[in-house]
Amino acid sequence: MATKIRLQRGGRKGYAFYSIVIADVRAPRDGKFTEKIGTYNPNTNPATVDLNFDRALYWVETGAQPTDTVRNILKGEGVYMMKHLRGGVKKGAFDEAAAQSKFDAWKANKVKGLDQIRENEAKSKKDAAAKALDAEKKVNEEIAKKVAEKKAAAAAAKAEAEAAANAEASAEEAPAEA
Image (tube, rainbow, N blue to C red):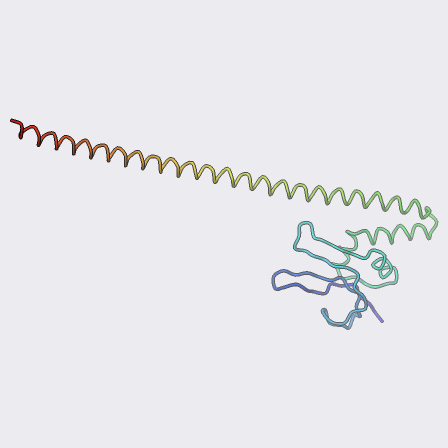
């Protein structure tokens, strides 16, 4: 039986969520599968991958052919790196402990890079929110100035109307006294 490691689509319309499955080549995309080895969520930044590393490594070493997207996911998770290191151990280039230490160093570097991406993303969101807040404050200050000008104009108009009314009243009282 020819097997493939591929994605099985899930999630709602416009928000895809995938399961990483081992399936027969002849089975439909969302149909029958042999084993589920993980999930892939491309909607996050960076994409979230939850993978059963040991089973993925087993299936790759057994000869299951991954699709292009799954191959990139497995490379990113280090499955192909570990396969390569195990090949070196079988050939006698180095021992199992050296292979594990090389893999751990690679994985630590990879995690450090992903953490850096997450930090940069959070920082850019924070900066964007601060810029939006500053812009909103400026708009609010301009609105407050306009409101204050309108109040001052209304108060001046009211004072002018009162002065005119007082002048009119004093003009009416003056002829009555004469």
